Length: 466
View 1 (cartoon, one colour):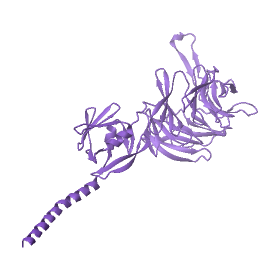
View 2 (cartoon, rainbow, N blue to C red):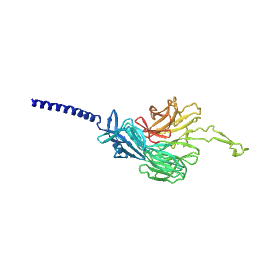
View 3 (tube, rainbow, N blue to C red):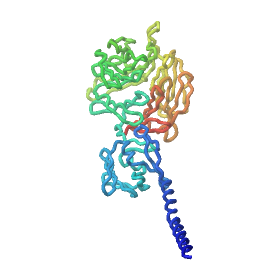
View 4 (cartoon, rainbow, N blue to C red):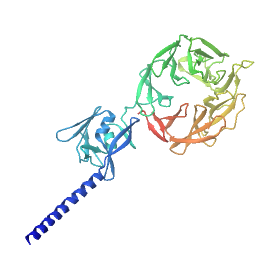
């Protein structure tokens, strides 16, 4: 009897023991499943990085230590288990299970509390990165300090742009990474022309106030003087083979000339004694050019009045820019006037083979809109394209043309035009605050919007300057 009783007691004890332990095991297993640690793919300053993540209550949290290491910050854990992260001028403090963190003593609320798993702290990545002064979107982290402003920009290649800003009495030119916005100074100068890019994208050229010409190798930042000729050089432009630079010569831009990069010698291409040329365009073979001619307004003054009164009459009739085409192989050796109308003409582009020019025509009528016009090198114009839209800008990108046009109340549209067939397609929309469209030779797209440079990436716009 006692033996049976002992067995019953033993079985009851075993059952109690089992009923007490099993839920713990189940809970532990469930807990482990709920906080399973995964390796997730992130991009930090455009570089792929693997960062540990967990899902807690349906919210994805990322490892504080992994993000800290990826951005180059420092991490320390105090004796009271406070996590301290220092990055540049920011000191961030947080505690596990807390729904706030502090940055330089200022508290910031978290939507989801930080959590500790396997001795590692996990937090909402967006809140953590933004608290340290970075940006976060869709597993993409950037903590690069961006350049302030962008007055002018050109593509150097598919991964870099050259951005120019005024600085005191001069100008600073920077190389800016298209993916991250990281920048470095390329040139600080005064009284120099804008930088122009070589066809291979490896160097830029400019002239100084004395007419001397310099090149800069983008990979090494080394500057080299290639010409000591002292004539004024306006609108430098590389030949397509990169061996020379075309330019408008003289204080009135009367002569079209070119300078050899090999020996610095200057050769005149056209000297027709016509002043005020502008917007020089050169064909791929270097033998054909197109340009504007601007006539100066007629100014008359009453000789009976004191000159200090500045009482003058200005007659601007016939001063609208006209387009001319010149072929160096032509028998008569004279430029051909392609246009004679009274509309303003901007963004002149000469086709690679020199067979036609395209430009935006803008009538003096305030109610008129900009129109894309194409004229062949004999002066025959085609029917204006995009007549139903206000065309703001025409840009060359490799063998294609791109247009920036009005599009609705708050956006502008970007169109791509095949130079050979003339067919067009909508590429993308951009804010109606866009003032300039930038296209690389490979069709990469950027724009200046309210003084900031933005780059198109996978159909979205990303700021790479402030």
